[in-house]
Figure 1 (cartoon, rainbow over the protein chains, first blue to last red):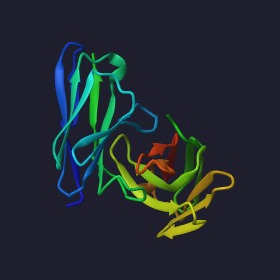
Figure 2 (spheres, chains in turn yellow, blue):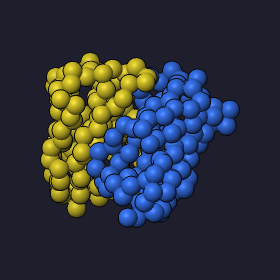
Figure 3 (cartoon, each protein chain N blue to C red):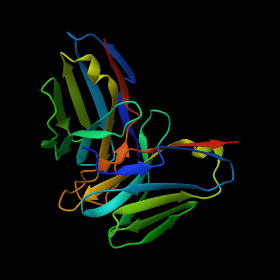
Figure 4 (cartoon, each protein chain N blue to C red):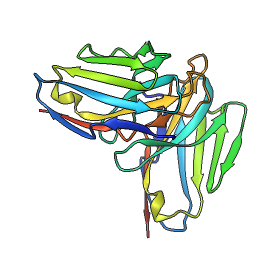
Length: 114
Length: 112
């Protein structure tokens, strides 16, 4: 199984809502990533987890809160988002944080903040 | 932050023609990778070239790397309509593990 799954596929939320994005992989990968991608722009790294511990936080606002409850799951909790946070949120995984390892991406969650 | 620039930003060709996309980057790298993204979906890894390699092939794909110019190119030969997608280069800087920084991307359209 070389698949990374993400739920939901689409999400519309108000600025006062709390919601969560979910990512799952069963490839035994120990590194997992969240990226944010605006329309017609490249993905931008938000967070990196390695062995369920937060390794990298690319200066992301605190209204985004990542969580890695186990080696297969990665969540992104959203609270008090702004309309400019509307984007495609991509999850990826790789065997480890070593360079030269392919990252496997999920299909993304398309988020609209009203 | 965006490491590299890609050109062209958009490319439209006929089926059967070759497509060439270029990528430039700024820092020393461990490797450079190319990814493909279909219409707002997830990215798919295409090919990786290490910093000590100059050229690599995979099927209809040919990648070159010039570390002295900090640039790479992706050539897709005998293109097909199904190759229509956005193509991104991604660099893994030295001493940064697997932290990828993506270039701006090239949107390729292959007309049947």
